[in-house]
Image 1 (cartoon, rainbow, N blue to C red):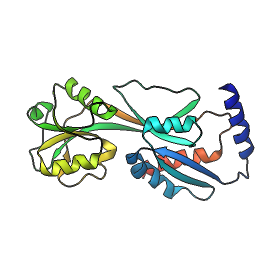
Image 2: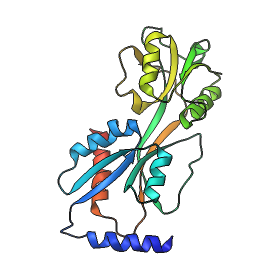
Image 3: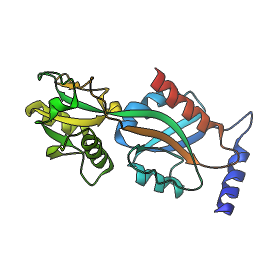
Image 4: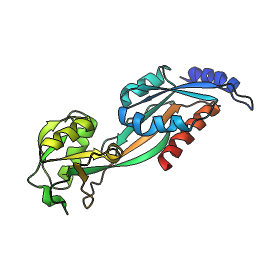
Length: 223
């Protein structure tokens, strides 16, 4: 591991300098992060850094990063689940993304969690991280969810909600393109966040292109 870091630092140090050569960065990211974060950031990056985006779920992206098949990864983890750290990596927090309850827009807006006691739910796969965390957060709030559809695809969730009077739990980032028939339960807070991080290999002299990518992601969010 130490020799691997020394070798990486030597290679990347030769690239750093006032006349740094253009660099191509392969960035692994999950689908929502690609559309909401990476693509807007790519539009802000000027010449000198070329980004190639690779769709990958967080665990896959970390494995690809460690294997040096990609150069950076956008991954997420949840407050209610332990973060399984990997050695030799540097993490930068990009976004704290709260989980939200959403309902159909044509039903009376719930004022408190008890107003949803009798509703059925669309939640993520019970074996997946979002599904597990959603159930944990609802149970902590006093709701034992009656699940009628399991899906980790928020567009599938929106389609289900077009036909059925159900509620769902989704990260705030997924709601930026929320259709008109869906509404956030603004008065109800689930005390759980998804944290999105930019992860890179830890080296002594990283190429300046990584800082450009990081700044572009933060600027895209601010914009």
